[in-house]
Image (tube, rainbow, N blue to C red; front, side, top):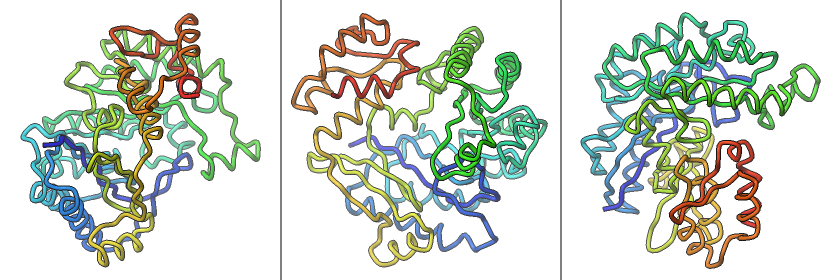
Length: 377
């Protein structure tokens, strides 16, 4: 039986952050029941089409799924259990905002066993600039409350922010590492097209750090996390132990199968010898209509070519510490990767080769997309 992850996208937020380019919408007090029912029906539709699979991870993302009450989360977990064989040790993650702390206990009681807290910063001025509604003390309280449920806790932080110094980031990161957490997701601020931040950059109202400073901040991040016993197992993710690594994200990085339900969700499933890519309708109303009419919410279903599959395996696999099996990539491609580029990148200390696997070195992780492009050329 295939091991599979499930991603559930809850698209609503109490406010839209200026750096966010996800499929999100302002929560305006609408009844959640229709969308909850549509997601449950979409899960059933996937099972009807692709069979009853073994599920090892269930991830509530968004948007802000921590707006959901415990009973609503329990409803969706029950739908997953009805149509799939959810493993006894299934990782069930909820992306959570600090301001939803009052719901954490009931969400844990509903089945959440891993909280991913979107603190984003522990500096009040930075939080205001990032458009966040909470302050730093609210993040501390939320992390403590999540830990008090007895479930696993991860924290998201954004660095390389406007005006941020290496000293300030080091202080912030060390404070985070002292918290009752087992996992950190540390992302450099990226200016995504179409966001409010992108428009500010175009107007000269927002100045991001130079490439040199960004590289310095990345190296500093690795040094501090390594010293604290939180080594990077992926370019932006650090875990205290192997068991603390995000099982769901590893599904993506290892190019395993996952079902994506909810407005705008993406999925990848192996079926009848092919790898199929799915994308759900983005607008909640369109998603509701699609599920009502066809029993599934996707707008597109495309069989990936061997080249596309190989490129995804290479791109995602090189993000993780153990890298990717070269023979797997080349078997999917039906041809070797650019061996001349591989040897040159190895000589430059950007890529290492060992036991049939290729992996990025610490310095190579700073250039991951360029390296993948060279190897795939």
